[in-house]
Image (tube, rainbow, N blue to C red; front, side, top):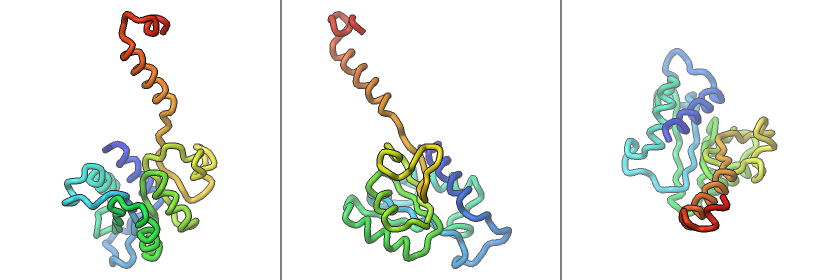
Amino acid sequence: MTVRSFIIAFALGVLITPLAAEVQPSANLPRIGILLTGAPPPAPDHSMSLEAFRQGLRDLGYVEGQTIILEFRYAEGRFERLLGLTAELVHLKVDILVSGGAQPVQVLKQATSTIPIVGVALADPVGTGFSTSFARSGGNITGLAFQNADLSTKRLELLKRAKAGPNTAEHSRR
C-alpha cells in the first residue's frame, strides 16, 4: 500500500500547482477531493492507506492544512451516496479528485470533464472507457491500473494443479 500511495501522491504533486514559498491563506490552498466508498477510519493515523497517502504528500512538501487541503467524503458502503458526495466535491471547486474502483470513478467522470481525476486500483481503465489507451488517457482521468488478467489465469491453473495433487494425470500433463 505504501508504494501505491506514494505513486499517487507523486502524481498529485505533478498535477497540482507548485507550492508557494510562504504559507498561503486557506482559501488559496490547493484542494484534493477524495471520494471513498467505505466509512471514515476511527482516527486519521489508524488507516494505513490514508496515512501512507498523507505521508507521500508530506514527502513531496505538502502539509495538510498548511499547503494543501484534503476534502474527504465517505459513502460508508452506500453507493447511492456517491452522486451527492461527488456533487459536494465539485461544488467546493477542488483542484483534483481522487477515488478508487470503477463505480466511484464512473460517478466522478459523469460529474466533471474539467477537474483532473486520479483513479486508484482501476482494473481495466481502457475497457471501462476511462482511458483511450495506457499511453494517453485521452481525458481528465489518470491513475494506477492493475492489469492482472494473465496472473489470474495462471493462479487458477496453479490452484487446479495443487488440488489435483502430484500423482494425477492432470498434474503430469502440465
